[in-house]
Length: 397
Ligand code: C2E
Ligand code: CA
Ligand code: CA
Image (cartoon, rainbow, N blue to C red):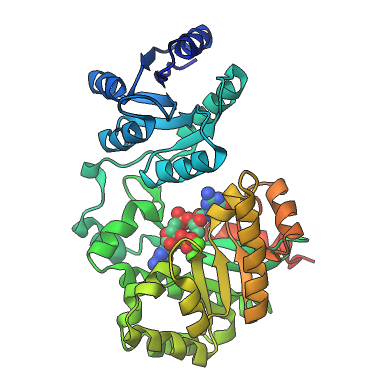
């Protein structure tokens, strides 16, 4: 088994001894320990990195909360497990804080320490490490000239992730997601290139390439009598362009795609910060007959105001609610309220991030009808997507 470095932050000496002894029996790597936040920082300073910090919260001296803040800026902590007897609501808020700090939260063991529970979390940690794509080092992040070359060479490709009905998993359309087939690094997801693109105002150039790829697919399928609705992500900055809606109308006409088969997804944060002039574009797109989705609903702020003002036809509930639904009853309440809200506003609701059958069943109970998530399908290149549709929509029959 691969070595893991674990740091136990626990002020109570007996608890600490029991925990460290139990871990030493089952884990091959070094088990470090600290009695308060200051000691834990010293331990971190003295080592290269710690895979998992097992963290108590309340203690004399520097407490667990202050230590976590430090741990986040050190960049040396792989993941955090809480081991505390604090009130569950406060622990929940601490979990939110941990994520906000950019740390990976593995689980909450409560107290006293349970080796079984911890072993499960270690398994989760190993799976997590294997599933996270290798992060590019700053030296490997794309440069402006690399991005421009990629755009010039048509290396950006539309991937398609189906939107399906929760019951029956019938195909209801697909979201177009950008992928960059980099000659050196292979297929890169947006996290690797969107920030640099945003910095250099290149998102718009990529959008038009993906939009044409999507429309070309719709046109090709239409000639075979097959219709598919596609949703494209629009960056808030693009809304400032006065010709946006007109350019879209021209392309729809050129590819002979009905506006009703095209939707644009705009993140809630983007919409909240969009100047009034950009909102004209949203109205124009709706006037054309295109759909408009408020993306990542619930992840931003003051969205209800915009939702009441703007002509959205779909809400996409951010996947954090699906992820937390089972462990946090409040999230289930938020989901069923969003279901009611969408119904009352007369818009469709897509619930994002469905990864398990349990989540699917619970979401049906909560009134959800449409969803997107790895359980149904991951984003896929065009040829795979056509094959997927053929099976799902019975095109072969
Ligand atoms: P998004 O618009 O919220 O897209 C959904 C993201 O969630 C996609 O990540 C998708 O792969 C991921 N996802 C889908 N189902 C699941 C699931 O069950 N579990 C989990 N954990 N994730 C799931 P992706 O493709 O990496 O894109 C990330 C973000 O990058 C997108 O979030 C969107 O904001 C942005 N993006 C992607 N393509 C474009 C684009 O062409 N233009 C613009 N402006 N933004 C884009
Ligand atoms: Ca989206
Ligand atoms: Ca989303």
